[in-house]
Image (cartoon, rainbow, N blue to C red; front, side, top):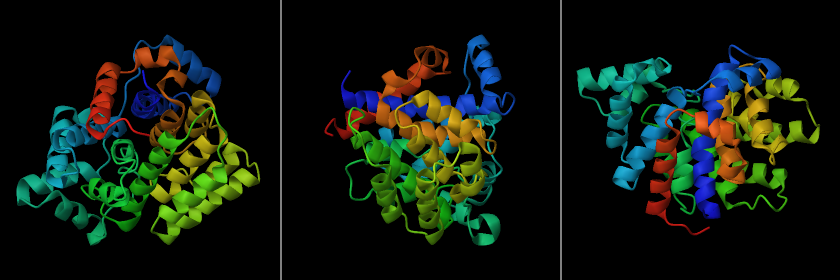
Length: 309
């Protein structure tokens, strides 16, 4: 397995495991209890976070680009097949509007929240395939924006997805055998972000790292809700606090209250992209629901966009 293949698999599988284990952490918020539960379970089942990430990857493989209408259709088909995945209220409303009013997905997404669109973390949680596929593209922001605004049309919702995609892209390019500067990582993300709210929160991540804030305090300061600027920063903090351990990153993300599954999905997409799939515990990989398919779709993404670092 090439290093780049390991990173593609690491990001997709890592995100799915962060999601699945984060969902379990709602019921087992203590690390020891969570680990006992993970040992006892035969399968680690994911939520809508991973279902939508898979849908995005499938659409990218089908179209070799972000085609908004095709992406929306893929999301809707996957939702109709598995509506029990734990979707928030936004996507089902959009799907219903498209079906009944024949709006485009973008038009329907823009109609939410009194015409402002959603700035939840639902576009960021699924953004890893965009960061992988367009990692060398100068149009990464625009591609992430297209993928996000199918369901999350607010500028913050778009910005969060773009920053998450960029974090995955940066992590893919880094060599885990060499030290990297968290400060430079944050600076690149802050320079990439386009909303003041996201830029300010990214600098707050650096401040939390500089002050060596404990995760419990950092999660309070950075946020852990379903709003993207109140959750993505703590997910990035979890990765940057524990860059060399997938497990420590995951536990940091999911054991400090808040939107645990999505925090896990976002943090572990970046961690897996940095460390590669072999850094993920084998017993977790073996238990991941549809793990073989997730690995296969990651390989297809890599095959389409090339293996140059």
